[in-house]
Amino acid sequence: MTVRVVDVCEITKPIASPIRNAYIDFTKMTTSLVAVVTDVVRDGKRVVGYGFNSNGRYGQGGLIRERFAPRLKEADPKSLLDASGDNLNPDKVWAAMMSNEKPGGHGERSVAVGTIDMAVWDAVAKIAGKPLFRLLAERHGREANPRVFVYAAGGYYYPGKDLSALRGEMRGYLDRGYNVVKMKIGGAPIAEDRERIEAVLKEIGKDAQLAVDANGRFDLETAIAYAKMLREYPLFWYEEAGDPLDFALQAALAEFYPAAMATGENLFSHQDAKNLIRYGGMRPDRDWLQFDCALSYGLCEYQRTLAVLKTHGWSPSRCIPHGGHQMSLNIAAGLGLGGNESYPDLFQPYGGFPDGVRVENGHITMPDLPGIGFEGKSDLYREMRALTE
Ligand SMILES: O=C([O-])CC(=O)C(=O)O
Ligand SMILES: [Mg+2]
Image (cartoon, helix red, strand yellow):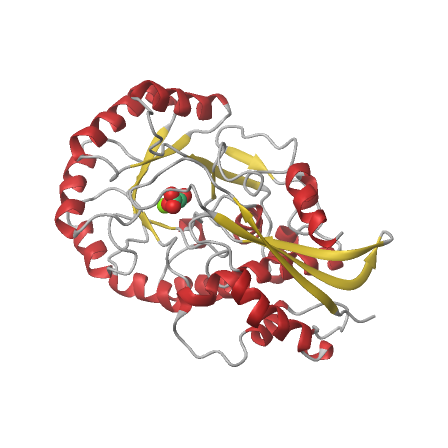
């Protein structure tokens, strides 16, 4: 048998909502939905892999159509195969996409490549006839653990949203089985954010923990002022205080914030991750890393990031990716990450879990679906199928 990539399709879709974090609103947010069509037939149908990018960066149609999809389609099909010749080798596909690309400049293309890479891994696991998390665990000589920690991200600034609406939102997450919730900070004056935090803590009581996310808004002085306020509360983490590339700020913050910090969703390569670990003052015994493969060159690159972490004494269990997609759920279950983000009420149908999967005690259990498992989420799969029909 051999495998050919016969087409790579892209469509840019809205994932808009009337919400705001400390930096941006999401009223014009989009995502690229991609299908990698192969000539392999399973159960009478062509194997198609699907992918999309996470919220926060916009759709990548231009780059995908002009550079990355043509390179994949023009590559010698044999050059993309694994040693058996029966499946694609994702690293060879990745290298083909990245031919004629200079190093650096990750933010320009890491989302486009990450989106196609998701579809390639989906196809590879489907061709192998396995859930991606089981394929990954096998390749890394590990035991898969289908039970994955998930937390509920929300707590955005909405027009007209008052404290009781914020409390109601958080109560809703607890009712759905979550025991860690996250809210935005830095989009209001510090005194107002303190009131919002206290209101949420009062609502969730001992049933859950609260993480807060400043989305990179603060300068050093403000980040420290917030650290002094936040350390009065038993928070799960203090996320992205300053600019994602201001490693000196992050390191200085550690002096003022002894509890857990989190960052990394806006770092786009294993080189960026290495710099964060070298210079950002992040502590492997308590802090969290949020690199999101769908924004940062995909799972081929994420494996290189995990290798960097290992060299520096970090366990994969300190990683809880940004983005709330099933791809990272598979990586978590297959490679032992600490869990995954989820947005119970936002960015649908792209986020969330296959139909019928419930959150219990802050965890979900991965069903055994081939590939990433998109076929098990009917609203999402409907959009995906429409791309190739
Ligand atoms: O609001 C956003 O840009 C999303 C985000 O930071 C998160 O989920 O951590
Ligand atoms: Mg964040």
